[in-house]
Length: 111
Ligand SMILES: [Zn+2]
Image (tube, rainbow, N blue to C red; front, side, top):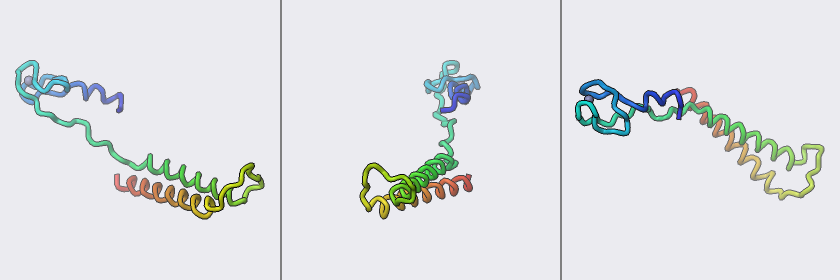
């Protein structure tokens, strides 16, 4: 994923002779000892930034839907939208985004 980590992932030290062994090989080319599979890359940390961004986007979308469909804007839409969109869709989208961004904040606080 991260290009700067390419050097570290490409080779790992042999547990027996200490020479770099390419990760695609499971046997050391120098001492012929079997190299145990060691996961150098830690599981990707979820710091919640992506959740926050996505949640805020959904909140904005919900607010926009509410704003336009609810007739709060001076503009009149060229198409007539069903009333269920204002009573159902906008709050669901907004609350979904709110929940997602709160979940992102929670992940950030933990990390
Ligand atoms: Zn070796």
